[in-house]
Length: 250
Image 1 (tube, one colour):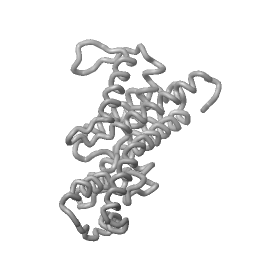
Image 2 (cartoon, one colour):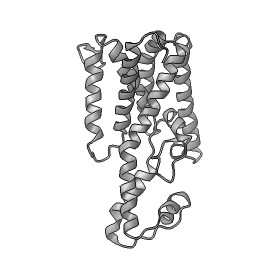
Image 3 (cartoon, helix red, strand yellow):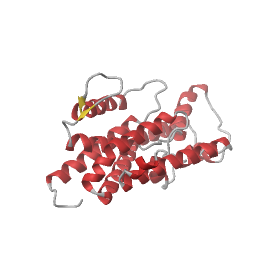
Image 4 (cartoon, helix red, strand yellow):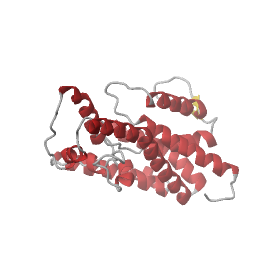
């Protein structure tokens, strides 16, 4: 295991270690009764629970409900990220990784923050004050329900305000998009599929699925698909520009 880590380029290796450490620490805190996900995950920028540091901390956090969230992202980081780091060098790769992660956050907010604003505006038109909405979330002040018909709006407000985005998926999708652009004909072998598939088809198809899911309301689906799309778009744009002018660093 340690030999495998030593064979990874430095930035990829350190990102892998940091993500695993965050997962372990989050698990330990959860056992002790403190959930770090709502604190370090990224809420919408107009949620009362949003803090600026969440822009940086959210992409080191992963769901504690399934370790596969972490495993999938770290597999993508090692498989594709290590190749890109060897091609670009550590500084350029780290800049790319961070840009894709932040780009994913921006895309996540593009639609979600607008939807939250609409719900808040509707509640305020129904007579609920901003103090009531904010106080309930931050100070656990009782939320007075004036009319039973208001309940769906209130539940929507709470769900959109409470639920944070976590995970390195946005950055990983950026890495995958960059890999598919630079090495489109590389054949990738899927575990449960008998034939290898070229990167441009596998990653491109995966992107289209995420794009479709970004605009579908599926019951019980808490995945931030739009963040995946955002990371991939930012990654593609960066690699496209860099590839046109290979003499420039950025």
